[in-house]
Length: 133
Image (cartoon, rainbow, N blue to C red):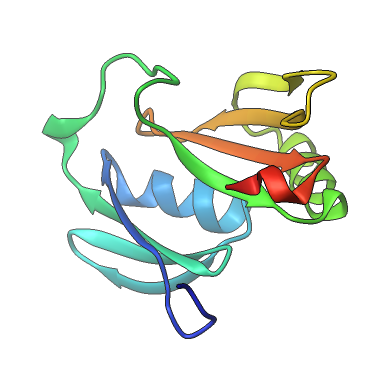
């Protein structure tokens, strides 16, 4: 089981490290952990995301499925806070905020952002915390 000493790690392709840095650090508010010539390592809401410079590996068209990543917030206030931040800094939404599975136990609020390398990020909050997994 996960505890606070363990960190989930995700590596994603990146076309431009400077653009990734602007998106993840300046706009989204992640903390830069390290930067090398070929990657940046980020504290992404308590987990590690590494943007690897690989311009030949970028999806030409962004699609929600089968690949996206993000954060499921336990507290609705945290979800609303990141949504407000995304709007305030004029981030590019792939899908505007909406409610999925309305009226069902798994009902949740969600939105998708598009990073500069066509990676999709989903942020969501479930009304019932038991549905987070």
